[in-house]
Image (tube, rainbow, N blue to C red):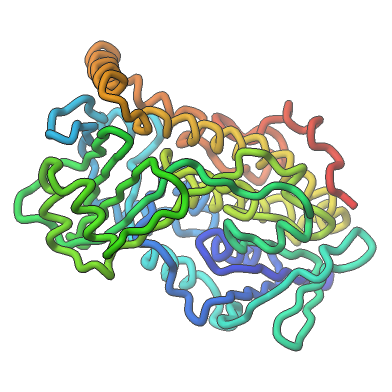
Length: 419
């Protein structure tokens, strides 16, 4: 059988995971990345147990687990430092099968790239989807003065995906989620700290350790879209968070203005008709951009990648003979799950968005009381997310266990965008 060809548009976390999974499944893959290098945009990424199990499929799960920097408890605090709730690390590990691993995005990209032959990724290659293909013709992608034909195109081209517009013209894309975020990686403060997230009035801050001794911190403010600091973003963070509890002021004092990343958050709250059309599939933010409040954006892109590779495995004669049917199965498995997480992520942002003093006081009192009376309640917010497992070789396209693809969702999407 002739080796099938795949083109992956975008070499981010989702695109590289898809490349590794497809390569292992028997595909000849070419990756086209617009940027000049694989150096990722962003600071850190948290990989929850669902994504770690997905990475087991490409032999990377144990490497990721070895990078866990913290296996203890976490805290939810007020700006003054009062603890509202405690996240039990041991209970989370037992409930979901392991710890969440926080690592720098560059580390993850390097690990993913190490699983690929050196000639698969072409950087500085701005690609455009010319034809999504159909059952009787290949898909076509143009790059520079060259046109590539492929049995499969994976559009992992991010939140501003041009391929999404080609597949579903006129459909609304991601919209502003109501808040902007800042991210920094700073030296560890002199005084030890417990990982925490802190909620204020329409603002939040999180501080988490990295294995290399540095600290990843993120902040958010619920503010109109498009805002920028009049001077620099570090100065803006000092205005917003400089009087919050330690180590927040210490971390801000340790970074330079150019070390601060700021991005408005957008999410895809209106679902697309499908995640495929013809021989082209959408993956990650191109399909289902979500708010970072549950930390699932990159994790869901990784899930997408291994589920796609499962359905289009080149050695599976049935899938090879019916690639459009395999892509429809990918949509049926992924669209309901990811859109549920998009909605849950949007809902989870409402609590820290509260800004009036009475509402914030009531929120804090309720969170503290619930945490004290029902200690494991906060963990339940990740049920159906962190307990997901990838499809096994004998399960085919059926339901794969907690949080996995659901047969009941298939009728709603059967046959969509197969043309």
